[in-house]
Image 1 (cartoon, protein in one colour):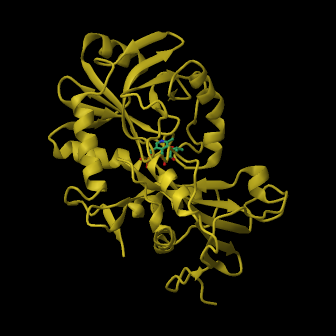
Image 2: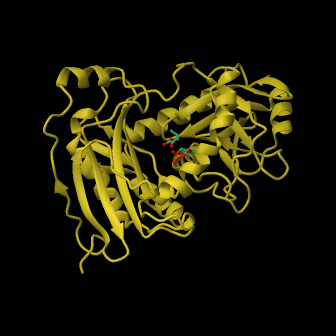
Image 3: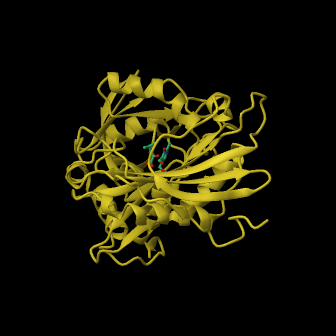
Amino acid sequence: MATLADSRPAFTRLPHPAPVADEVRAEVLANPGFGSRFTDHMVTIEWSEEAGWHGATVAPYGPIALDPAASVLHYAQEIFEGLKAYRHPDGSMALFRPEANAARFNASAKRLAMPELPEALFIAAIEELVRADAGWFPTVEGGSLYLRPFMIATEAFLGVRPAKAYKFIVIASPAGNYFKSGAPAVSIWVSDYTRAAPGGTGAAKCGGNYAASLVPTAEAFAKGHDQVLFLDATEHRWIEELGGMNLFFAFADGSLLTPPLTGTILPGITRDSLITLAREEGLIVREERYALDQWRSDAASGQLVEAFACGTAAVVTPVGKVAGPDGDFTIGSGGPGQLTGKLKARLTAIQRGEEPDSHGWVHRIG
Ligand code: PLP
Ligand code: COI
């Protein structure tokens, strides 16, 4: 039987009979915030052992029916991705490095014992949704259409083993600033909790990692901080990443450091892109371990001049203040640094089609 894996993807298109009214949509697009409003459509593709990937559909956005015994509801067999579509100055629409998201999605699928999705199908599904909801690009400065592809185990079975049925879904949400505060630099809280241990699922983008980060994140918020910082699980000393972002450190000698990909942190696509851009700017970029103590003393001595968080949702966000059980410290002036600003400007100019794409990162949606 021909499946979507080996044929040109064919989507059944069921346009929304009553899309969101133009005036309401315009209001959302002028002030989208992050992740609370969704477009008119969604893409769904099913997987079964017998049929593989099948039934690709673009249909009205809405609730999904699940058997109460569906494995995802009990054993959290779920993975997701996050990427953005941009409206370029010439009116065209483009994705940023969707092939990298497709590859990471499949790495996550492998780790969570889920079926892999052909890269072409992952990208075609996203393109279908963006085309269907092309009227949903935010009108605010820095806005984009955030895409959230995810996969859940749908088989009704309570035994603990990989499910035999899955749904892949893509939804879209107009996005502005991730951080509500709109502050020029964020404040982070060093958590006593650990996010991921060696051999665990830290490098996979699975919902369970985020569920485990909610208590530490709530703790950070309650103390007035914007994000939580996790240290390594073994020595509780080495900086890993934030709840939803990777970290970079800039030194007075002109070098940049980011924690290495040892399997416990998410291999960020923004992280990878910034490493390339920083090297092009002539910076030495080291992927090395960095201890919290060292960060504190380097910040005090002036060796460490800037720090920033990066990710699809957060883009590039300066870190101004660090707080933890052992006290607080400030990075540089506590505000945005020059290098952070320069790297952010270069990255966003490429993403937004304002600078030529010499890396093959921009994927036009035809
Ligand atoms: N680390 C975590 C835990 C994340 O959730 C994210 C966001 O996706 C990142 C890092 C950054 O990854 P990317 O740059 O691919 O969005
Ligand atoms: C992203 O940046 O896409 C993320 O997934 C981070 C967070 C919103 C979970």
